[in-house]
Length: 120
Length: 231
Image (cartoon, rainbow over all chains, first blue to last red; front, side, top):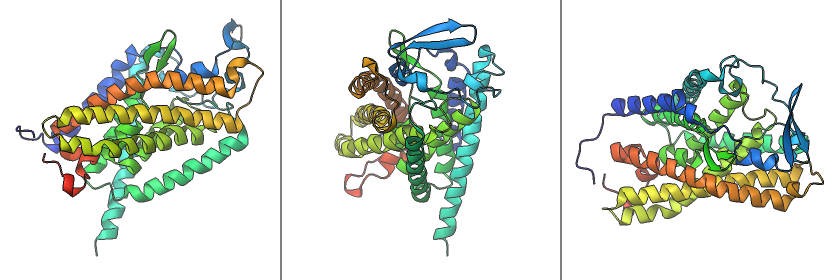
């Protein structure tokens, strides 16, 4: 189908990695801050009210049963760095890199397990 | 579509931890036949890419957004079992590093997005695959359409996973908007819209990879020989 010569694997993977880092590090600033489909489904029937202790849900909704995240004080919580939301891009790059290291490592081990199994 | 802790009761959370562990054990076992030295780094990048794109919530209605789940995308590019592991690792990193998605809810979140989303998305992709190979000249466009349909169906199915978990172990309240029917209808409507966004992102990504390196698209690489695609 394609007449152009294929991109080398190395070049392709580098390009793909750059796109992932660009999305995590820069495009992430364009994200909508509105609740997603599930969050808005679980907060239907409630209103968010600001109190001294923070935001509380008043009314009758599923999300009133939700508990605070046990790791909500962690340094990267809510895609910030130490609570600074203007560093979302930095948090994104750290997260994408961590995901690549964990996933790539696991897949490398699984690929090796296969080679050991199929070799005599 | 990450559930917080407490939305479903403890026994139901535990049940879906068991479902997720069983599913991922099978996935890890079977993923070995999808992976080699060439596709392992590709699969790692697919996971990183899904993490990145999941950060970018897009608006679907006034005051409501959605984000990519990535199940169909991962399955089409790197295979269904590896795809399940990709999305699961994203969810684990999000829960442990970014406090996004509860810890006891991790089993349910993996079941919805990494297992149901992948199984349904990949099933639709395989069902539509013969269309891609029959129309050689339009191949990229048809592949894009296939990716769109697979991603839309996977997203809606994943959202119904939450409805199932809520039906089994949700804390019911007296409000009209917390009845099972109301929750199911709202989730369905919202996730058809989110699924359109998921479909567009998936179609653009799969098409771009297929154009550059068709051999790196698992769905095309594993097409049955009688309908083999010439790259």
